[in-house]
Image (cartoon, rainbow, N blue to C red; front, side, top):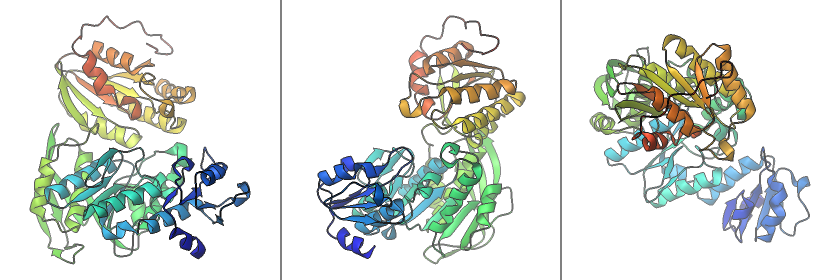
Length: 496
């Protein structure tokens, strides 16, 4: 590794993508799940690579540039990237957020609170990356190690003092965050997800637990202690644990005063002194807060964000002001009104987020409820069966019209629903005696929903990538609500 570090001083860049190699770059050949980077080493050399790094050097062809054999190419990529960009995370107060759900809302909420308080802040997350002068759409929740370090370096160059980033289980497992220094960690909740990548829930939970390895001894770890899997991970943490919960014993407790379709009012209680990162101490105290987005789960998200903001020395009054002016995140319990309908648009993509949507709308007043949900494409049969089971369980206690779609007219190859995924979803609904309609395209699904929904009804657009265009499609057809009646449904397959 020392020899490789000497070559790093000569390098003009680091990459694991052969098509991005420029003269003087070090190319790290990653043996991925679908593509073996070793096959592209020759192409990288031809583009002017300075050296090749591989953990499978026997797979490489004869090359006329140095080859460095390493035990783990992904981990080496992370180390090289951090060193090349001079460890920018150590020059920032960086909050890392992990969990199955809530990461994006917590990250955006913290970004808003810091900006509102006058602290220049960067963001790396599912929706976008903001580095102070530029904001670009994201392609991964947690970028690859090189891009991640590059973004952090841009934040330092742009004189940002704080940053917030989402940390996915995949990002942890693939060592993207191995050489990132966090000032605070947050764990929101854990439920089944990404089973296509991790294989089993136990593996997924183990990947989440590896987040602890990224937190130095004195780094505060803020945990939603009411979640049983979060408690399990927290029990393994030997560092500075800060627990938070709604209506449960914790260092920081929240009591709900009012919960409406348009927000909440709650009291946040510090049950013991809170030591901030600067060494100041907040005494036990209470603060009344207002949040303008619906759902108990969003109160949990706010609770965790508030705790992190207080740890970073933001005055409670400014935190409360920032919270009150936050207007939510696109497709996270986003509410709008159209042609007399109330519409909820949410990217619910696992049992936990599905439960959050239904638990939130259950006490609302409406005439009828219509739900359009998108099957998850290229995410495996296991998560689709679990999602279907969760939806079916709510239909038993909360009657609603359910329309299921592949969104085949909206998704690309990476998100296309496979026949096996469709079968897993629909067969689970049928087995659990759910009443549903299936139609392949998002357009036909939304049209079917408009036929069923009238003024005073609640329409829910629910799902990840397949439902991203749901609002756009609904808005396009809203001016023409007088559509032909529904076609007869096939009694066995429920196909529209």
